[in-house]
Amino acid sequence: MSGHGHGHGHGHSCGSEGEHEPAERGLEFGLYSRIDLEKLQCLNESRDGDGKLVFKPWDQRNQRDKYVESDTDEELLFNIPFTGSVKLKGIIISGENDDSHPAEVRLYKNIPQMSFDDTGREPEQAFRLNRDPQAELEYPTKIARFSSVQHLSIHISKNFGAENTRVYYIGLRGEYSQSYRHEVTICNYEAAANPADHKADSIFPRTNFIS
Image 1 (tube, helix red, strand yellow):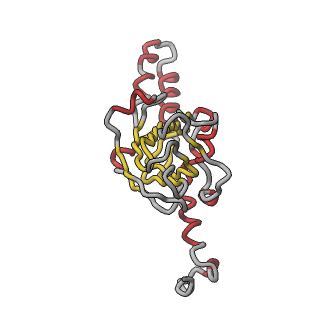
Image 2 (spheres, rainbow, N blue to C red; image 1 turned 120 degrees about the horizontal axis):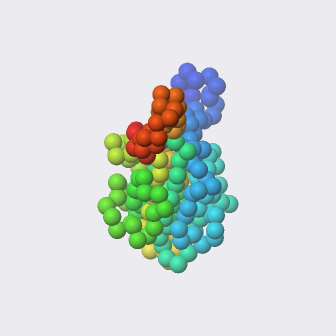
Image 3 (tube, rainbow, N blue to C red; image 1 turned 120 degrees about the vertical axis):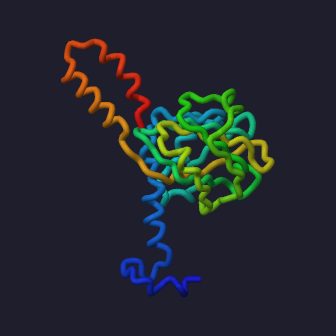
């Protein structure tokens, strides 16, 4: 299996097939570092705080000591706030190689504090999943729908038939930008141009919608 892994011109990866690609993949799946973990929520997790553990570096994706398991049924709902604006391009969801692996996921954007009552609405995108214990399968998103995401909700609606769902890793691939910079610039401009004009306050809420 390793016979063709040499001779591609990458001297630093010679003799270790595949080492070059995962390094690049690790950078692509770096959005976990842009999550505001203190505010991340996972509804129906069996143990408080476990939902945060599945958002981890690429090179830890196959570690089995950190995972989240659903509590009263098979559903899990992750509310994921980012520290800026994200263009989401793909997602990986890895679980156990049995019926507890997620079978369907629904993605929603920019609905903070989403609850299970909100999952009846139409998602931005939904996927039927295959079992992926090695975290190898990426599901590409419709980028036009996920081009300006400050908050992502991931609803795991069903598994393959087990009473509870277990997740080891959720990988998010995409691009990140610090969206608040534009707001700060506008606020500074307004303060400098109209230091005594209180009407400027009414402008600020609208800046939140500038993408």
